Structure formats: C-alpha cells, structure tokens
Length: 286
Length: 162
Image (cartoon, rainbow over all chains, first blue to last red; front, side, top):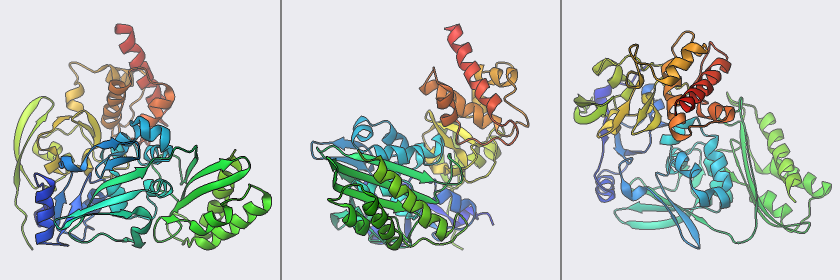
C-alpha cells in the first residue's frame, strides 16, 4: 500500500550541530536520510518503519573529498558520481570506482552516497567490499563527540551495526599505500546493468616475485553482512599461486562464507561463484 | 496518527519560479505531475529502476520518484517540457523521431533527458558511452538499438551545426 503522506515528517537541519542536537534529544526517533535512493523505494511501498526523517543531503559538513599524503578522506555524502570523477580514487582505489560504476544507473549514482550504502547495511551492497579491502575507517559523530572505528568491525549482524541512535557517519578514511597493489572487483548479477548482486567480490594483493606478500578479500551477498574473509587471506599470505594453494584457498573460502537461498540466487550457486571468483583473482596476479 | 504538516518550498521548473506548499516527503514526480501539471514526466516502476521519471535537478539526472519534495527546495529543475515542445524540438527529440527511437513513448521523456544530460557532459560520446549513460532507462519496445542510433545521430547533427 502507498504511504500516507501526512504521517511522515522530513526535517532539514541547517548544519551538523543542529542535526546532532535533534538526534541527542530524541535518539532513535529520527532516521537519517541522505540521497533517498533506498529509503524512497521503501517509502513508496509503505514499508518504512520510521515516520520521522532527518535530511542530511544539505549538510556541507558531510561533503567533500580531502587528500593528504597519508589518506583520502571522503565526506559521508560522497556520491558514486563524485567517486567516479576523482583522480586519486581512480588511480589508487580503483575498486571503489568499479563498484560505483556498477551501482544503478547515472541517476542513482548522482544521489546514492557511500555512507548511505553503509548505513542501509544491505549485505548485497556494492561499495562496502571495496571499502573493506582498502581498510576503510569511519568517523562517527554525535553531540557527545567523535570516534573513528575500523569499517571491518562496523557491521555486527544482518542490518545491525555499531552506530548509536544519536550518531551519524561523518567521514570515511582510506589509508594510502605506497606499495604497488593489484586490484580485482567483480559483481555477478542477473544482468550486467542495474542488477543487484548475487555475489560481489573485491580483492587487493601485493605481489613480490611469485609470492603474495599481503592481500585483502571481501565479499558481498554471501553472509548476513558484507564480509572481510580473513581466514582465506591467512592461507594465501606468503604463498605463491600454485594449484594446491588455490585449492586450499577455495575450500577455506567456502567454509568462511555462509550464503543462503533467497529470491536472487541459491546458496550453492553463490558458494561456487565465490570460489571461482577467488580463483580468477589469484590467477590474474602477476 | 501524528500529522506531519506541509512546508513551503521554492524552486524553479523549466525557468519558471514556483512557491509550493507540500508534504516534505511527497515525491518530486507527483509534485511535477499533480501540482504543476507537467505530465511529460512519466511514472514507470516508482522505485528508481526504470528511469521513466528522469528529470534534471541542478543539471544532474535524477529519478524524480526517489527525490522528496523537500530536496527540491531551492533547486533548478528541467523536465521534458523544458527541453522542447511541438513548436521547437531539441536535436535529441528530432533524432528520436527520425531514427525511430520512440515507440509507445512511455520511456521517451526519460531517455531524452538522460541523453541530453550525457551530451552536456560529453558532446562526443561513443556508443559505449551512450549505453552506459542510458543504462538506468528501460525500454520494453525498441530493443534499444534505435534509441542508441538516435542519440548518436543527435550528437552528429549538433556537431555539424557548430
């Protein structure tokens, strides 16, 4: 059933301080609302839990991309379009751009935001696996102050996260690396454009000679949350890409993920594809 | 049921200034069609998948079904009516007619807006660029080939004139 409009409120605070004060006064009552690309879909279907929404879109404090020698810091409202047009992100964090390019069409990329993608907390989201393999950190702010948390530890269960009811995601920080890295991103859906993932895979590796010196792996749509696959990383770190290593990595990954049957795909298909993408990534390393 | 009140927003649509009393969560799509009677903007899926409701908001392509009215406050909006009408068509619209890019017509306003937006960003697109730019606009009639031809033709025509 369509939503009954007068039942809903959407408030646009002038600045971040005003937004945080409102959240502090009535924690849990106000749902943060960024570009609306997820929330408006639920709204039109009459499926929103909340009735009061706090618009963040106009808050300048949540915008902009800053580059220092150590890190690239992105405002929570950074859109996919902004990701795609940033030269440092394109050269050093290319998986983020690949994820952005595969998120909806141009109109969605213009309004969808990185922090919105994180806070919506879909395990099938496209940008979180890229953020995980780049060791992203999140700055959470409230009227009480600010704290940085590793993104890896942020999602705690299906749609559950370490975000207090009075907190907002303010910024994301990606540490820069001076070492050459190889990057791999692959989204498998029903069709190439506009489809939501059956499996999404992100990997980065530093290779020295024949040896994988270090690597990061993260997958989406294979667990209750997007998942950094540390056990699989552990069996690959320091190894060369040989058939036995690949086979062990495949088995480890299959145990580390916990895909389910749902309307988009099956657990069996997702497990098989995850293993195939891992092998494809490993064989692509030079 | 708690009653959320209407708010006043000011926006410019196709060059005309409007002040409107709206529910802040009302969809921009409904505002355009029902309040301003600009019915060129179509509703397809209503969930941001099909692009039929595409409009330009401050020069950026958006799905108007996913934009709450409050986010149109202070915005400069262009709908298909602002691109061109029967008395004066945009080069993209003429190319859609010439190359058979429109059949039933429901997706056409959105396709034209997405194409106009592409040509503003990139006046000399490849077919691949056109495909990417229109990936968020679904058509169930044409099979897309004639739509891509239309956009490329519009771009050739625009270049021939300059």
